[in-house]
Length: 142
Image (cartoon, rainbow, N blue to C red; front, top):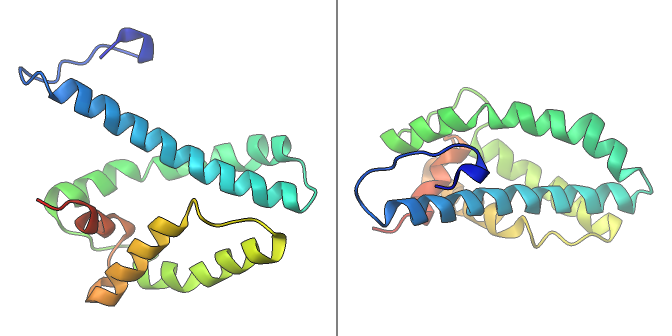
C-alpha cells in the first residue's frame, strides 16, 4: 500500500493481496459516498443547509457508526450474525419509510436500493433476527 494513503501495511507474500485490499477500500469509500449523496439530496430537497447538516449531524453520526465496523468484521469472520441492536427484520420494516420519504421529496433511492433488496432477501430467507452483517452471505458466492 502507498504511504500517501496513510501508512504502509505488509499484507503478506501474495502479490494479489495488496491490490485486492486497495479495491476493497475503494468499495467501502464508494458505499460511504453513496450514503452521503442520498442524505445530501434529501436534506437539499427540504431546503435545508447541506453543509450544516453534514458538519453538525452526519459526520459525527458516521464516526459513531464506523465504530461498529470491527464488530461486523468479527461477525463476518465467524459467520455468526447475532445482533444486540436493530435486527434485519426491523431495519427492513423501516425501509418503507426511507423510500417513501424519497418519493415524497422527489429524491431517487437507487443508491440504496441494492442494499435494501439484499436485506429484504436475507429476511425472506429466514434471517430476520440477524444483524446487518449477515447480508455478506448473499454477496460472497464461493
